[in-house]
Length: 362
Ligand SMILES: Cc1cc2nc3c(=O)[nH]c(=O)nc-3n(C[C@H](O)[C@H](O)[C@H](O)COP(=O)(O)O)c2cc1C
Ligand SMILES: Nc1ncnc2c1ncn2[C@@H]1O[C@H](COP(=O)(O)OP(=O)(O)O)[C@@H](O)[C@H]1O
Image 1 (tube, rainbow, N blue to C red):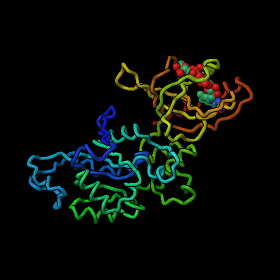
Image 2 (cartoon, helix red, strand yellow):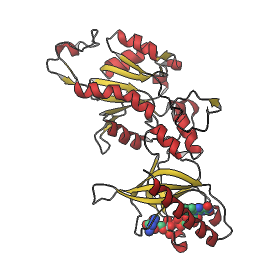
Image 3 (cartoon, protein in one colour):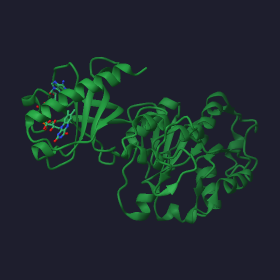
Image 4 (cartoon, rainbow, N blue to C red):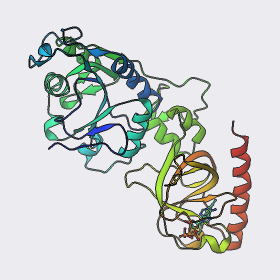
């Protein structure tokens, strides 16, 4: 069934292969995090899609047009820069376990929009799609449905039944339809980048930027490193909900954030952060400095994990507002303090350190 929405911004999000904006220039992949490597894969479908138009006189057209319709077109057609991804995440489909994401759907749409992508196609990853042969995937999805004019994938891209198709296979198959495929070499981090861990999932890394490496880095609290790998700060966005109303009694009210269910949450502990409030009246978001705690609040016998942020030198009402918190630096692990007084003294110290970190930043 067709489900097309504009998602509050100028990226079309289609969760069906019908009703698409066609023809397309397609970047294929999972793109969780939209990190520096992903951005390199998406780049080649942006410029041509913006600058070039498919011409009706046959120029730029696939020689073996699947339906013959292309060659009949007389006017020039705009090629839509499109990211094609799978939903749910294939790992979630195969394991049956929900998977947390660096960029849940809304965030992914925002990131793609900021890169200049026009359309996001969510291919429903189900039994039928996972059983398509590489040949059928190219013919049915890319050629017939998406009317692909060019494709970009990362060097390690796999597709089709049992992930048997490689990026080179895609290049060969697409050549039958005169569709050029750009294979983007894997983006690696340089020796300048202080990545401490040389392992992802227990395996040594080859220096390649990956979603897994960023997750591991965030799990360790390596915030500046994660920022470099992503090409931007890692953010948490959520609505401010009520907590236990204890914060105000110790002089540190904290806005409790309700995050999307599938958002990947970094290491528990205290962070120096920048906070963006989205006011309904002001167009631009306001930026403030803050301290954030992620954890179970053992000092007050908290039972659930919460994400809460205290804005430095500010008083006001934030309930119901949406905040975006940019992580700048991990300050310390969460602790159980013997008293609220001791917790208060530590939070005061956290605020001082956070201010130093945040004002020292370029
Ligand atoms: C900067 C900061 C550091 C915190 N560190 C701890 C901590 O180490 N241990 C702890 O139990 N709670 C910690 N908390 C959470 C407080 O216990 C919590 O903010 C307080 O109980 C108020 O909760 P409420 O928003 O539900 O009223 C911290 C909170 C902030 C803002
Ligand atoms: N500097 C501040 N930082 C964060 N929240 C603040 C600040 N000043 C006032 N507030 C308000 O106080 C609320 C948090 O107070 P708190 O006593 O911790 O209650 P709760 O347990 O409901 O979070 C926030 O949601 C916000 O509306």
